[in-house]
Image 1 (cartoon, rainbow, N blue to C red):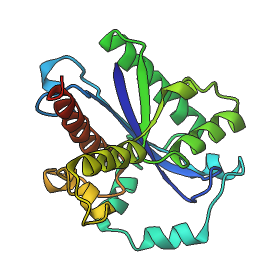
Image 2: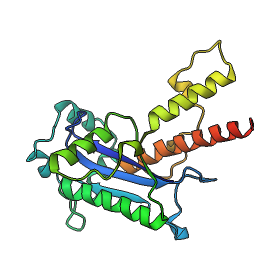
Image 3: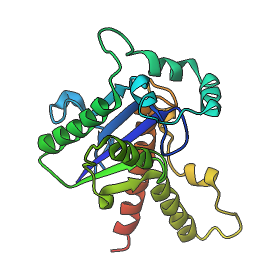
Length: 227
C-alpha cells in the first residue's frame, strides 16, 4: 500500500480555482517511528513533490481568482508567502499548469515503480477542495486523471471519525466531543517540525499525514488488545 498526500495553494476556494503551487508527500502508514521516508536510507530518494504554477496559464484558461482569497493571502505569515515565491527564478521557473499536473502524475508513477506497488491511496485535507480542483483541471485541459475514485482518501474525515470512535469507546459521557478534544488526542506536527509554516503545501501535507498516522497507530493498538 502506497500513501500520497497532496495539497494545492490557490487563488480561490471554488473547484475552478487558479492554482499557485502544489506539494505532495509519499508516506508510510505502517512506519514504526515516523510516517516519513528517510531519504538517506536509499529506499525513496524523492519522497516529496513541489512545483510552482505560472499563473498566466491559469488566467488564459479561465480559472478563478477571488479578491477575498487575495486579501486572505495578504494576511498570512512571511514564511507562507516566501514558500510561494522561493522558486520563482530563472533557475527554477514557474511552469504552466498542464506541465505541473503531468509532472505530478509522473512523480506518482515514479513512486509506484520505486516501491514496486500499484496499490495507492491519494489523500487530501477534505473531500471537496483539492480533489475537486484536480478533477476540474484534468477535465478542463484534457489530462487523464490517473487516480480512480476508489483511491481517494480524506484526512479530516478519517481523523475525526476515528477520534469520535475513541471518545465513545472511552465512555466520557459528561463531556461533549469537540474538535479541540479530537485533535488533542495526537501531537501536532507543527510542534515537532524543524522548518516550514502553515500554507506551505509540503508542510501542510506533513501536518495532515502526521495526525493521520498517529490515529492509525491508536486504532491498530486498540484493536490488537481485543483479539
